[in-house]
Length: 209
Ligand SMILES: Nc1ncnc2c1ncn2[C@@H]1O[C@H](COP(=O)(O)OS(=O)(=O)O)[C@@H](OP(=O)(O)O)[C@H]1O
Ligand SMILES: Nc1ncnc2c1ncn2[C@@H]1O[C@H](COP(=O)(O)OP(=O)(O)O)[C@@H](O)[C@H]1O
Image 1 (cartoon, rainbow, N blue to C red):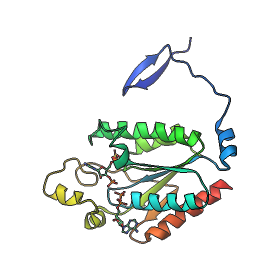
Image 2: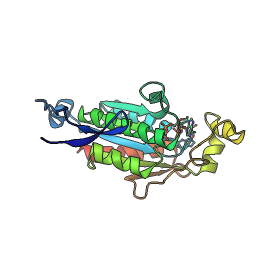
Image 3: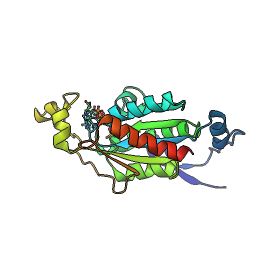
Image 4: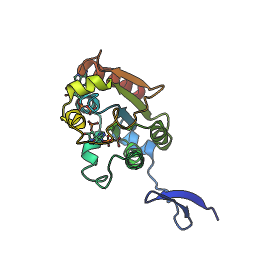
């Protein structure tokens, strides 16, 4: 008997009675069907760095080129699947664990999956990379310092932080661990939205060959 330890409901438990069931259609079959390689474009960065803006632009352009895509955005997913999670370190880890699992499934379905979450911890991003597979996981660091993000403040959140209304805010009162060796670096103080999106699209087209 093979006993493995798995996470269930956020707890590590012995898995005695659950068995993996193989299908007859695999990742490579679905990719062939869709005429593309399923992959995950993982955008990480501070709130206001430009993750959503750039991811939306990348998805629009890839869609226009005929690719099948899906965008998972932090704010949106927190309305549904992750609506029971807040912004403690533990909840952020659980948030990213679930998104790693979901995006691994979407990739397995053959989709070009765009993930736009702060994902502040290296350990969580490394978990996502392992779960998804290093060849199909693309880490994209959307870089902007906290002063630039606070100046942009597209949702008025930095103003609220200043007033003391929001606690544990990333980059101010909660940590952000910068990627050490991202696959793509987008410095949004130097690149326009279009330039940043084009850099990602060029990378994707290369990988799709
Ligand atoms: N305390 C605190 N810290 C950071 N962000 C906050 C916080 N409270 C609410 N928000 C809003 O939630 C969005 C980030 O959610 P994520 O799921 O991407 O965060 S995380 O990956 O779990 O850290 C984030 O969206 P983005 O601005 O798009 O990053 C904010 O709109
Ligand atoms: N070069 C740039 N790249 C991305 N966004 C930019 C850039 N310059 C200014 N912005 C603005 O910064 C804000 C970024 O907000 P958003 O995309 O919601 O960030 P995030 O998803 O990381 O929280 C938008 O209002 C966008 O128009």
